[in-house]
Image 1 (cartoon, rainbow, N blue to C red):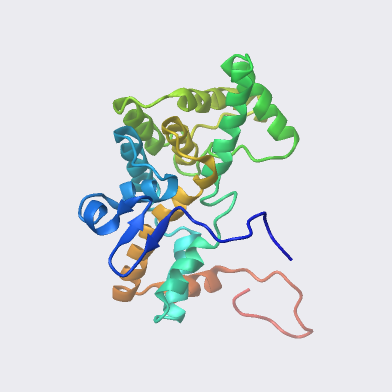
Image 2 (cartoon, rainbow, N blue to C red):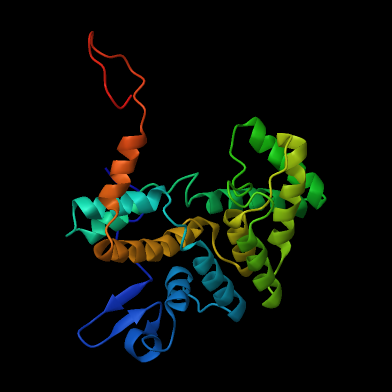
Length: 269
């Protein structure tokens, strides 16, 4: 069985011989090591181009904004995995990343695709608020999540989103998608019958699409950022272990509401 159309193996990312390592057309040792940041290298490796100053600043800002989230489920999964397998740092990191989907980490890609659909209507002549309302309504009718709006803690507004928008303005980036994100915020009450404000997951594509970051790699931004955060938590786990405590608290607080055998009473139910 053949998957895809390629019949030979080709890649434009990296090549090497005994003396030289080439990454995206640049000499790794001569041009990159000690001369570019990891963020700049990531952009180069991903797109084949050095980032503009605005693209670099915004990519860096989004990575910082999304790296740390406290003891959220992905972190708990990582710390409990390391507690059970302290020799498997890679497995513990993977445990925290494997849950990337439409709710956790994947929301930025979903929001970005929403913005692009609105943008397509605008390029066809629709006014921004009309386009936003039509697309949000269509997504709602098809039961697609309106990702990137509302937050359990930052109910009035997400300060990270506002800061990312400030950075975009400071860098002179194209704010077209920021305005689209705000139009979605205005459209939501008419469709969902409640107000939801922009959170960081919508702010990330709003600023990155404006500097040409590809939507197909948008989910990679929070994955990359959260990997750094997970490694920090896992190092702390080696110094101040709480993985088993997290498991204990979950077991202690869980309520069994199933049937019991005749004559059996569980003390903790």
